Amino acid sequence: MIKEQLIETTQYLIKRGFDQPEVGIVLGTGLGKLADELSNPIVAPYSQIPHFPLATVEFHSGKLIFGEIEGVKTVVMQGRFHLYEGYDFMHITYPIRVMHSLGIKKLLISNAAGSINLDLKKGTLMLIDDHINLQGGSPLAFKEVALLGERFVDMSQPYDPDLSAIMVDAAEKQGINLKKGVYASVIGPQLETRAEYRYLKMIGADAVGMSTVPEVIVANHLKLPVAAISVITDEGDPDNLKPVNVEDIIRVAEEAEPKMMRLFKQVIKSL
Ligand code: HPA
Image 1 (cartoon, rainbow, N blue to C red):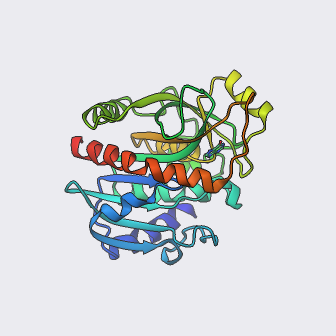
Image 2: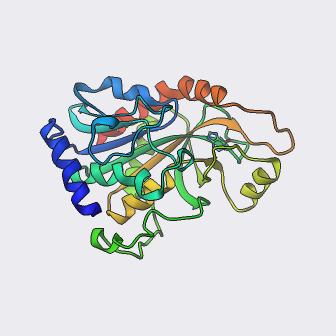
């Protein structure tokens, strides 16, 4: 059934003018402005796209946007779906499968994350080098998965080395200090306790957030090269933990957003 749904969604978007995008981008919390930089944009609100998860109130503004960045045809997800909104793994990753069906050859992902490695200060950009899935499930654990690709997907290098190298070069060209690290994904929406921050440090995480990993697993299922950036929005120091709220997280993400936009544009230029 998912196969037929994908065909319907893809055909709808092609009819709307989503014509063979090369690059797909997922914009994280507080990082949506890159979508305004697309030239000749075609905007499809999620609520109008057949088989897209129904937008919750918070993500009412979710849109899929097609246009050009640096002359490259790109499709951008402004707003993503999270497990904490009550969707399942299949739904939150459906848009990745749709962008792949539309023809994207590369996927760039961004998110807001808390730092575990306290060398990563607020506002830092971290290239995700590897991840730890703590979301208690998989977007590949369903009956029909074998119709869409392999079931037992290799994850020895989930983030594409070539695309990640282009990110590093692009950061250098733009004078952006880009760190590298391991991202741990949790379900949320509650933030971490002090004991959880300690635990995350022990298991080797540098940053923690509530997204990205399911999308990256599906990209690997599709053999779609993916690179991802975390914008560090808060610091999870268990010995000096200050209350954080989502408004602060969004504000820090918005402050770092121009840097991330420059980075993604430079990457696209370099492809
Ligand atoms: N924890 C989990 N998710 C997050 C955080 C955090 O500290 N910051 C932004 N997203």
